[in-house]
Image (cartoon, rainbow, N blue to C red; front, top):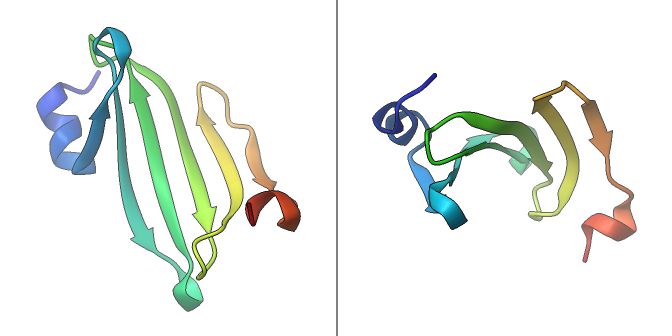
Length: 85
């Protein structure tokens, strides 16, 4: 289990959630202006509740989500009309 300090250092960005949990994230550049955001949600004891990857295009539209924890759900592409809202 990661400590709060470890998560802060590793992710760099976070927001406080109700009941003491946190949502951590970091962004990585992709190809052709696209980018990926990794999200980790933990409870007040820093126990990981979920971890996911969001894929955005160069215009900043969410194009796919890949749930990695608690179960690896694989990449799920979003329909263009949903991600352009």
